[in-house]
Image (cartoon, rainbow, N blue to C red; front, side, top):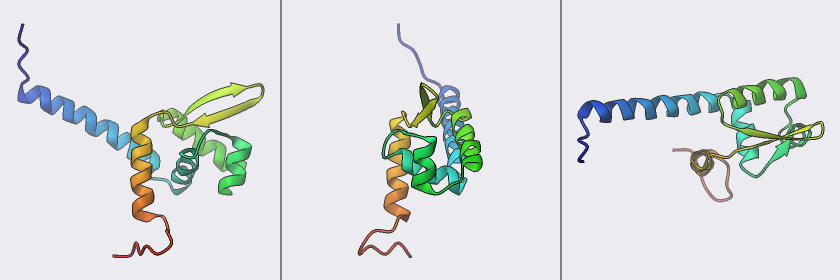
Length: 113
C-alpha cells in the first residue's frame, strides 16, 4: 500500500508544528520564565534552589513555574514535601543553548550588532 502525502497534509503538519513552536515561545516570552528555564537547563531543582539561584521571590517563582507546568515546558517529581522541576524535551535544550549563544555575556564575545 502506498500512501500519498498531499499539500493539505503538509500544510496541516506545518500548522501543528507552528502552533507547538508558538506555545513554546509564549512560555519563554517572560523574562522570569526564561531565567528559570535557563537555570533548569543546568539540571533538576526544587523551589528553594531555584529561588536562591535566580533571585526570584517565592510567590512570583511559584506563579511562573505554574505557567511552565501548564504549558508542559517542565515536568515535576515529588519527594516528600518537595517538588523538583526539570526539562525533559531535548528541543527545549537546543533552543535554550541557541539563545545562550546569541544573548548571554561571554568573555571576549560582543553580542551587540
